[in-house]
Image 1 (tube, one colour):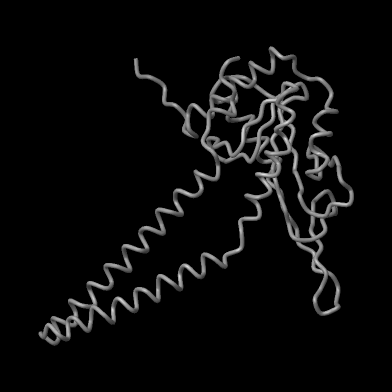
Image 2 (cartoon, rainbow, N blue to C red; image 1 turned 30 degrees about the vertical axis):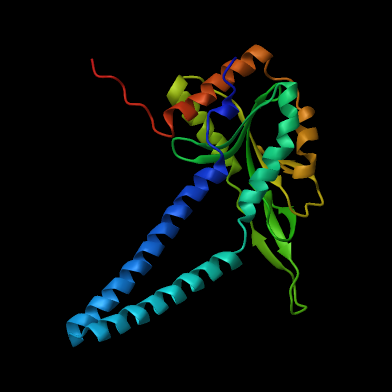
Length: 252
């Protein structure tokens, strides 16, 4: 097939950065407008040009302080941990493309957005990337992260609640609604944190450390031939073509 699914969507970083730049520009415009309004208010109340000039100076100083304060907050903001985890997963998967695997990243579905979709001899797989700060383990079939207490007390346990199973169900529904084709989809959570178990299959979900992901995919039993992989990739690529919106039937 000539059209590789990974070429049919924009880079996720660029898509996320655009709204942030738009909000930053709007904030800058609001600051500038505030300077003018302060000057006009002083002119209306006092009616003297010198007072108006003073108002503009004061407003400009206040606007500059707000802009610097906002910029400082942006500089100190914690990087998007989950976005970094998604990029690490995408980079780990790249070498497998030469073995026939197809990958889509940050794909918008009809009701959800999928971190990664893998299609190859090992079947159709939805992957969620996570990088929680702490040691990850499974308790009752659910991943939790354990963080040591800073006061010497018991460790803090936080449930992670992965969405991989819901994403796998959503992908099955989306593809069937768009193409009429039913797929079996495996749910996988890729962990880029301390995960001593490295790889655990629990129920219908697999939890695997990012460093083991490529090897796990390579060991998957064969479920799709190259021709079937192309067919399934075409069906999943329909999500890219519809842009996350269900096409309306043509009126006759």
